[in-house]
Length: 79
Image (cartoon, rainbow, N blue to C red; front, side):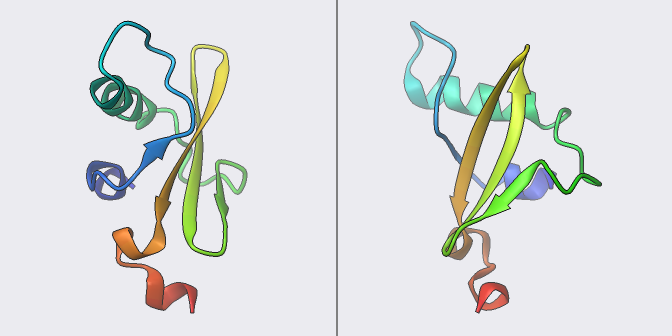
């Protein structure tokens, strides 16, 4: 999971840090989420037709991040 999150392919649907550049705040938010994603959970991810979504939290607030399957090298897996 850490390799996927380090790929740079994930983008957050909402970024909570205000006053920073969005890209930097987004990277920080994804970095903080690494320890909160439960790898054995069936509820912390979702699939769309062409992307993988992960669900995490910042404090008590959930947030969602998605990456295209093609950017993760998983497009053949999804076919």
